[in-house]
Image 1: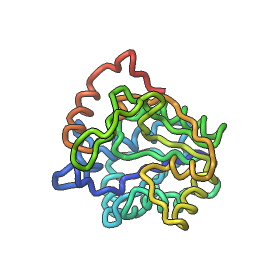
Image 2: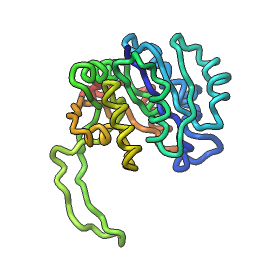
Image 3: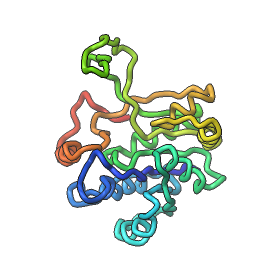
Length: 235
């Protein structure tokens, strides 16, 4: 069984506005609902778990999901103070019979079913897989004074995205160890790396952007109506 774990526990302080960014409307539909609908339409995913701010569990479960009209079972759980805590709480709601967990940020609503399926298949076969995109820009290390310390080589540097998929036992062990050892992380792959597990990478898509600011939301709305460039092909 493959379970999708959607992380929507953030407060969106960088986004601004009166509501958390995962509830903001993207072309008339809440971002969280758009993301859930992609997973709901993905045949390889059997069930869904979504981690939301603790005070929003009833609102999401009773109001937002009711209007979303999803076909698959969705468990809504309270997230934590950090993304890492939200994933940990979400994993507790993943059924024990799950073989693969696909973790995805709710605020990447332009993810494709093809990317989800490819990542899940690779995790099932190899243990762990993420989608990512190679860095094209020149990288600079900048001091606290705002001056360039060094120009860094960009070869072999990729920007991690989600989905990130793992065999269930692997991702549970990674998060349990991180919690015991008080190790913080901004993505799940880094915790799996600490186990010594090889994490494979599939090319993602520039369209699979993470909505962090109001400008990102405007870009996502533009991309919804734009054709996918030939050079930017999701897996």
